[in-house]
Image (tube, rainbow, N blue to C red; front, side, top):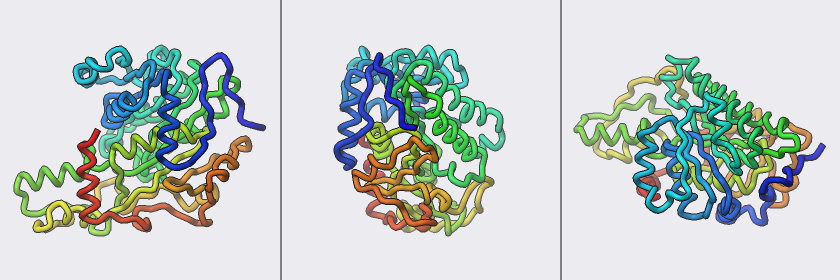
Length: 363
């Protein structure tokens, strides 16, 4: 069985690329966006806003739909972006839990980024059904609405916590990943393709450790709290994450999980880089927290390809073709390979962290 071609009645774009360099992939994807209609669920979140602004500044979409349930943030976006791009932007108040509203918003949409999710680990543990309704049932609703509307390509944002999850947030995102991958078997002649992007902690994002450390430093704390001196994490800037997602639209066949190659850093080194003269104290790991994060498990190594700037976890579908990736130099990883924050070969030092933090202010 081969991958079905998209239906001819709708505007579609090629799934193959000429060059696999990150810059060429981004350029190819942005060209696909020209004249297209794009919808972003969770469009008022940190990722959604940066993605929308990046596309507006570098492509000429016909429509860009901001789908979220936060009316105040939508108002703020309208005030900030409306003067220049009001003729392109559309603001839909809605929740991914509402399939009818999603389907209405998806009409005549070509590309969709699904970024809406409940992400706070302790909140998910305390409110499990709310997490499941948004992250799992919401993913199913996005799939169903995309299929009914005949969307061309859909990419869902995932997290390193979805690999070997130990908390409900990670488990719900793993379930959502499975929903999106399996959705490719449902597209039939519609030809909708679904893929997933998985990456680690975003430098400076709301609720993360860097803003916390900066706040404590500014308040004159005598020591920074560290959960465990062995703890490591993957780090990526928001702009890098946005550009990586954009590039995956050019590369995807459907059903892949894309994982960027990004650096790691120990939390104690992070603390010392932000405040070299300030000591740190161990406060203990919170419930549902790991010492180290994993983005590719050893069990996935048999189906993982390595490219210049990313890994691609292949689906276990007979119709999926490895050949397009091999033409661009993709190689299988070694059996038993595990992409974890503590065994990563790329590590941040104080200077590189400073450079990443400087990038966070750049649109």
